[in-house]
Image (cartoon, rainbow over all chains, first blue to last red):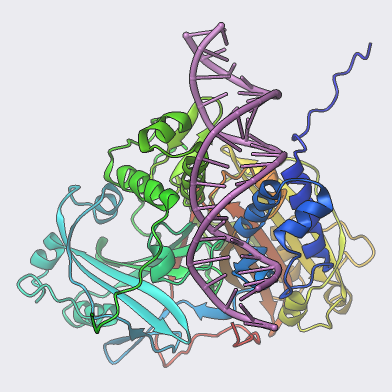
Length: 271
Length: 271
DNA sequence: AAGTGGTCTAGACCACAAC
DNA sequence: TTGTGGTCTAGACCACTTA
């Protein structure tokens, strides 16, 4: 009897074997990008399994972004090494009191902006250092440029609008973000900006609104504007993750002049 | 007979209805986070459909990151508004000729670094401005800290190693990235850095190697080091997208001193 | 022992677009 | 008309963990 127990590996199911076979073929180029795979029934016959097994394997690979299904043409191989076609240099330019995006893309509103009165979520309350549930002015718009889509939502707590005598306390129609930034700058509140980037899967109608191909995640960018240590606005942008790559010049600080970190946000240390 | 054709909407399949019902319940809090959903068989009886329909709906929501399956406990509701628990302030500090990461996390190597000789892909060749397929020195390592995992891969073209008389042409055992940066700095090649962020779904064994929960994307960070207009190294980091959020201080440039954009990379304008 | 989700079969019918 | 993937049913057996 063997003393050493055998190495336990992942169970090798049929759908797993099919998925591995197809993935290897795609990554090695045996199944060239842009070409359709053999039909599900043909693959089922080829492997001698039911179509359900094939479908499970195909579903896995669609989730990995390696396949895309075009009915009734078939299942098409996607280029796995394709990088996003667009590069977005993140940054703002300040000239004559006017803020401008570094990236000179002109986004067009698909629908008129929506001005919803939203209550601060726990995370937003934490960010703005306000009580959770406090109402906020928001401006929500869906935009497009070059066939791309993005969603931009600007948030400003009521307390900020009131404390700093902004014109939007009575008229909640916030203009586009850069104009809001201009107002702060010209009224004695110079701004510094920080961006927070995360990725998640689209939920529900985000897939259709942003025209997201199945198997591609969402890039979520939260840009905060801070003046005198106070976060005054949050500009949240959502873009499909397979179309755009974000570029940031990295600040190389020297310890003599330490980086002015934005106000630390409390974070759960639990997972 | 009506003149105006009816508005065409998405077909409302059973699995779609089940998924919508469950999603609404999760987002509204009727199905509280952390609690298990009713079992598949119970849901099938409840709706009067086969278990297959339930499974399809559950698969959809797992793909959206709203559910997580823990066998045999059941299917657990995930907090849809949870933000990543960790914040990574991206940046480098330069002191006494030594580069240090701004974020003071100590990552531990899970395995010893692997030094593979890799050929430049088309995208990498474009980035380094070298012919595609040119060999590169690479250093690949899987790390962990605080229960998180990440993969870090450092690339340096052979031509760079040779032209700048680096010590790694003969001994391909690249040290960790900051030490490589130190070498460039102390040998008369001051560096500037740019980071490129994108998101994609994990492929194949990335899921297991990085311990990625199904339904969560991957954040891919490419950090380039440039000296005298030449990109000398590429440091690529991959982290699970549900655990870490990236923070970048945004540079607000004034047009008098325009931002020194890194060498423009050619990009396909096609989708 | 019981109950969970995972895998798999063998069928069936459908909508859609190309031929 | 044909072939595609999408949906759906009604079963079956399995591995796993907790009670």
